[in-house]
Amino acid sequence: MQAIENPSLEQIRGWLAASHAVSFQAEGRADIYSWVDRTLRQQSYPQLSRANKGLLRRFVMKMTGLSRSQVARLIGQFDKTQAVRATVYRRRRSAPGRT
Image (cartoon, rainbow, N blue to C red; front, top):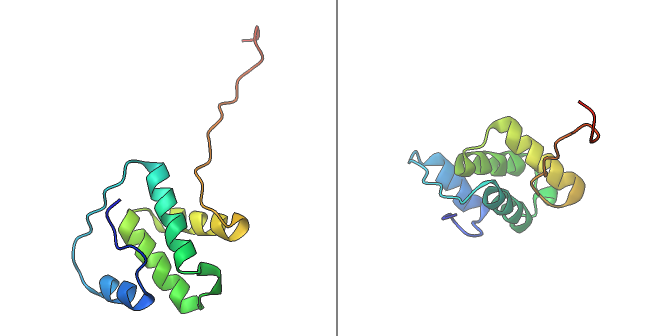
């Protein structure tokens, strides 16, 4: 992903105020999630004020292109586990021999 590495909150505020197109390049969901995890850690998300949390949330939404609800889920996961990880899908299958 090509993005600003470890920006300050003032840089984020200025970047969001500017109205330029975002060029987001990621290899996949794992790359996006690792960038979100790194960004939340670098900014010490749990210690931020409410206004700065909203600012960081908007920054993550704009950079990743994820929806508001998806970003909320990722931040909620970060609050609970101190990490943002992709959940591995496990298909439910019936026991062998059953149809």
